[in-house]
Image (cartoon, rainbow, N blue to C red; front, top):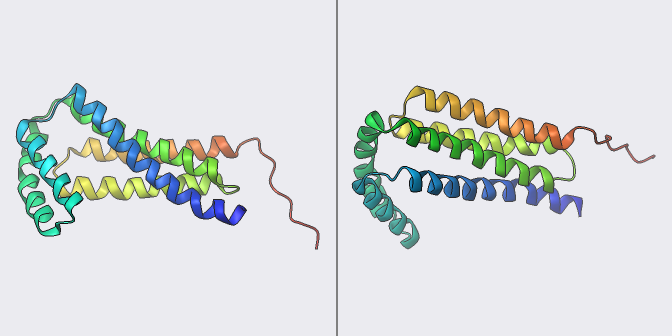
Length: 165
């Protein structure tokens, strides 16, 4: 049973992280709606992804890159902060799920989800011209949140003793 939990923990944590980011970004978009052009391109990208049309997906992505990069220059700080909070919150949710499922090594499973989140942040901020503070705050907040979850779920638990041989 422990082996199964070791296998399920990272997968469940990463899936929870992705859904957490999507849900939290949806809340941010409800408060700070993106411009109509970005909304339309996002829908087209989602449709292409759902249809498995990789060529259309790449085409829409190429169209979106300059539009989104230009919007990021003048975007409201609240909208940008909502994105950073979605990155951190998604990582926190995923780390919590992974650490709760893992039978041992909770800190490492939480940090694994955090590393996945950090890679995503680096990829997104490299693709679109995000302000530097977003990258720094997103990565620092994610590492702190996921490590904190792992530490808190590990703290106070006795270490497993090895079985006598």
